[in-house]
Image 1 (spheres, rainbow, N blue to C red):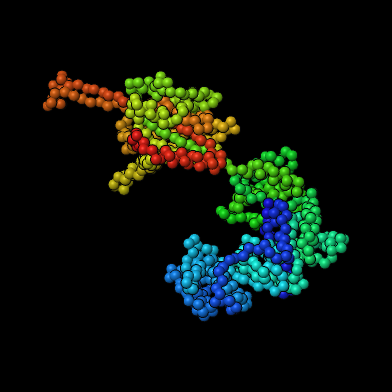
Image 2 (cartoon, rainbow, N blue to C red):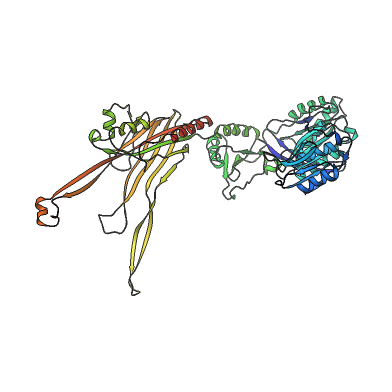
Length: 624
């Protein structure tokens, strides 16, 4: 767990706000006084500018004006400007610097707004970068008089972390990029530590988790005195609860780190506030799980904050607040867990030992949720000939490998009486090909969706049809007025799937499938359409990657035709020589579903590749 802390460091002419990350493992920011090891920004030097010193002081200056003054007035070199560049820059050298150094600063400043400087045949060209730069950032160079740039970084890293970055550090110069406020604070800090006394010193910044900075610093000072190392400067920084150690030798910083690890131990029985950032689940869901896990072994009070605005956090950035911030004492009863849905965090008030157990549970519970990719094919099969008894009979007689479900491992649970059933098949394509070779098959829809484990996904393709539910006629005004209440009914292909992944690698699918259409109303005089629908609601258990067929939803459509001699229609001869024929067409709706469990990114890539390959194939049957 990490915490963002702030501190005010007082020194000669300085009043600085510092910031640093407090992690689960103490990683002190240590920089030795010895030079070397710093990354340098390599920029070609212009021999014509050797020995020339300039001062840069540009604040929110337009790029064109900046280039004109820099190249024409300050450096007095030929230049060109790309007409497409725009923006403003801030560059301040803090005093007179070498002209070639000024070019480095200018180039870095322009890169912050997506531009750069290129040299060709002695001409400086201000052009756009190929891939943008940093937005709304400033570049500033700091010249050091006494301490080495590498050593200074030990005192600066905690101050700039997350708000600025060091882009060049060599010798007695540090160049940083960041917001104006942070760079101003850096200038104040440098003026405080860049003194002759610390010319050969090494710096170490040690954030604390439990101990108070002032008390720990005093104990550390006593330890140094005990080993005869009294020439170390130890400064407590209360706001960020950290200790700054300025040592004459790098070995003394290692001594400080070893003892601070021992001194910075929180009381085992004192309850403190910890903040856990939830990564993969919902904070309120984890809070309820914790309540169920620990309520038997230790009292847990769970609270879910419900009135936070969407996206608004009730907790400040960070993972630990000291005992003063917790607002309680070690004598309070029970663990308190508060869910902050706005920031998706858990605020836990517990002792160190209690939180250690809770943290272990959270790390096991807060794991990425598995997903299920569901591939569905809905087809209407014309029955007749070899398929006169239905799809199931045909597939069995044709020798297609199929395994039937039973009540324990996948029986269909219809919500209405009927003859629907489920059986497994190797692939959906194999079933469609087998049926196509003997009858007409019309693909109604092929919905494909990905859904999180135990969540419901819905696909709907169709229209909303207006249905009159009530009509009232008012004749009191002298002219009949009819008022109707209308509701809308979803029609078309509607699929709802809720998967549940089993530890055995199987998927329990709750399926609600409907295929409906509008037909003229012939059974009554009501002025509303009739909805013809075929619907199945089932719960089936399917092995991962195996297709299952839901079938048995049959329907019949009758068509009547009349024949006879020409000119006899409507006469007596029609009843003598005429004939009537009635043709009945039967169809069966089948639903083929194949679930695939997606556990990680590699599974997701495999599914995406399979879908892409299938999309490239041209289907040989018509799609509605």
